[in-house]
Each structure stands twice: as structure tokens, then as C-alpha cells.
Image (tube, rainbow, N blue to C red; front, side, top):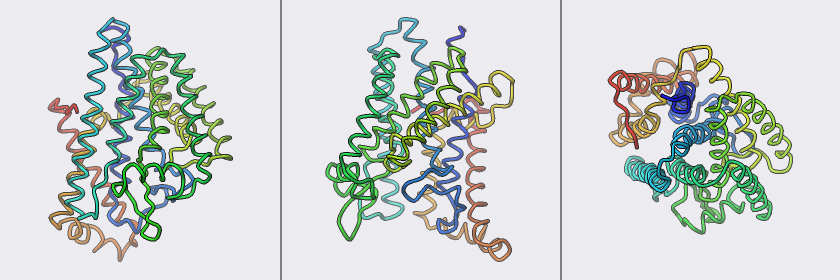
Length: 357
């Protein structure tokens, strides 16, 4: 196996820890009692929870570089690689659409939501993969800069970044109609935190990950640290004009979270790949999409069959709340949810069962 074919345990570990964090923040026992660091910012701002999704897309971009660029260098057929990337992206989007059908059934929602987390991952994977295969590195930097500048201009041209009335929400609502995440009953306006327009910012995060992955496979850790520093400083400066905002995935948010992700990836590489620290999270990382989708389906089944509330009350809240207050059982349930899926992915990994979407 050549050096360019080496699988980086650090990447699997970081992907896995990110997925575990997704499960933790998405599955509290009681949404009314969640510790502040485990909640998204209400609108502007960036909490620890707001780092999770961009971290996943950044790692997805790095994985694209690690998987595809060596094959390009070996002379593999670009057309066949492009088809593979597009089909995988389509499958991830299709899985997201299916899970939203399950959510519609479980929660008896008033309308079907088209966009979502897996849909965004699938779109970014497909588009970034095509860029990695067909665009030279120097041109990728130019494309990234144009994407950030163009998206910043679009948001500014919209006149406001406020909920529902910003340009991204208005375009999403015009295109998707009632099939957005949230509708304002008073005004009829709509908003989707994983909407079509804000996917421009998410794509920029994934492209940053591609460049980081290329540095990683070349052993250029110094560039990871330096780029992370520059990106964070640029994001912090830009936030005085357009604030950090996960819902809109603003350019400042792209740079700030991308810089942090670059630092974290560099640290994981130093500790896991070079110093031999345990690749904690690896089992989640090698079955990432399966763990995310499987856990979502489990949640929908618990809700649909009416088991979730009794499980939480009898297993956690009923005896914990009088002793520790309502926040502790909510967190305890979330930790147990993650632990259950940790057991599932550990079992799959032990049997070398890996679900590839």
C-alpha cells in the first residue's frame, strides 16, 4: 500500500466523535431542559453545538480528498469516479427524504419537509466531489473565495439577516413552499435551517475540508495549523459585518468553524496518527451515515409506538428529577442514547460490517 492510500485513523475517529455529538444534541430527554452548551444559538452566535455540523462537512471534504485524489493520480477514469460520487450523493439525499417520511408518520407533522441534514450532506458531497475531480487546487481556492464573496453579497443584498425575512429564507420559501422546516403562522413566511440557499455556505465548508484533506495526505500539518488560524481570524473579523449564524451558514460562520475544524483535525492527526493515541470514536466513524440514520429511525419508532415518553419518565425523569432537577435526567437520557448506539457500532465494527450508502 502506498503512502497516498493510507487510511487515517484520525479522520475516522474525528468523524465518529462528530456523529456521536450529533446524536447527543439531537436526543435530549426533555427539549425544555437542555444545558446551554448543548443547544444551538437562537439565531446569531455560535455555541459548541453549532460546531458539530460544519465539523462533519469539513471531515466529509477531507475524506473526499483522501479517497479521490490518490485515484486521480493513479489515472483512474474520471468519468467513472464522477458517476460514483453523484450516485452516492443521490443515495444520501434519498435516505434523508425517506427519513422525513418516517418523521411525518411518527410526529404527525402538518407537512412534509424536503430539505434536512442528510439532504445537505448528500448535496455537498456530490458537488464538492465533482469539484475535487474536475477543478485544479489553485482554481478550487478561487472558487471558494468567489463562493464566499458571492454568498456574502447575496445576504447583504437581501437587506436584513433577521429570521424569516432574510433573502435565504425568502428564496427557500418561494421554491419549496410549505415544505420548509418552519412556517410563521402570523405572516405565512417560511424558513429552513438546511435550506437550498444556505447550502452555498455549507458547500464552502466542504471545499475547505477538501483542501485540508489534501494537506493531510501530503503530511503538511503546518498548513493545517496556519490555515486554521487565518480562517478563524478572518471569520472573527467578518462577523462584525455579518454575524456567525448557523441557520444562514454565513461566510463568517464558514471561516470561523472551518478554522476550528482545521485545528482539531491537525490535533487529531498529531495525537492519533503520529503519537499512536487510541482512535476513540472510530467505530462511529466507519459507520457514520448508518449510525445517524439508524438512530433517527429508532427515535421515530419510539415516538410512533408511544414508547418514548414512558421510557423517559420511568427510566430517567421519574426518579432523577426530585433528586437532581430536570436537566440531569434530560442529559442522562441523551448519554444513554449515544451509549446504545456506541454498542451497536462497536458490534458492527467487531464483525467488520460496514454500511456504505
